[in-house]
Image (cartoon, rainbow, N blue to C red; front, side, top):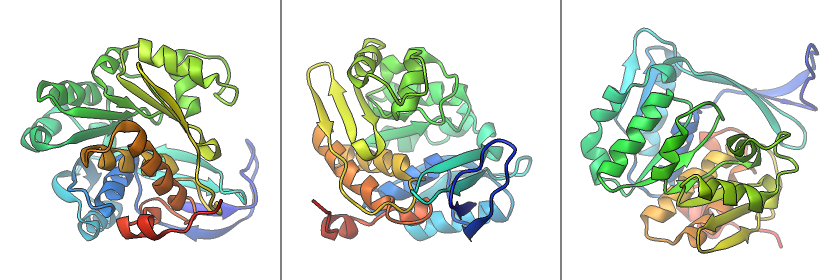
Length: 293
């Protein structure tokens, strides 16, 4: 649920907002829809509440071509919701009530093992329980599958699983938290952060830097990917657009750096529109979009 406002309120302050929109969201759902709209075959493993928000999400998954075989309707938990304020510069502040996401279990994942074994990429984030994240990573690796982990929202999770992650996609604030750096990431030394994360066992790291692009690194190579020039409306889904499109490009056989450049374009288009899943572009839109210089 998104409200546009001149500025994000401070603690204890009420500000008068403007336009209100209610659109399907959720990090895993956003990433799934993004990849599907780009032409990937996507199966989503998740839980939704048996409520109006869950029905809206399910209908949207069907509309966008996401396989919902492994989406469970949970009678005990409400659907997850996010309350989002977007300021005049397109920056946002988000509070998430995860709801049924907290009940996604390793058993739910096991029911999707056949789909996992057939996949080209497994994409995870941290809006689900840490034991489910760890189990999924281990299951994916047991089948020799590429694992893409978006460590957001940043929270405690089993750090040892990083040894089994092929691509880690934090933003600068999440990267700072993962390596225990001081501050909130605005002054992060990106090269030092990447080196530290690679030392933790990750095969490749992409730190997204908002309007400054992204820094892509493996143990053998590093490269700064510039952000595309676009008019910014809402940055809510930029990170999810990047991760979802990155996974799509990797599954298509692009190398990491080519995939990151593609993801930067997709994320750039997403910030020109309000909302989360509604902001994700199709493949045709990505190929035909006229970027500024």
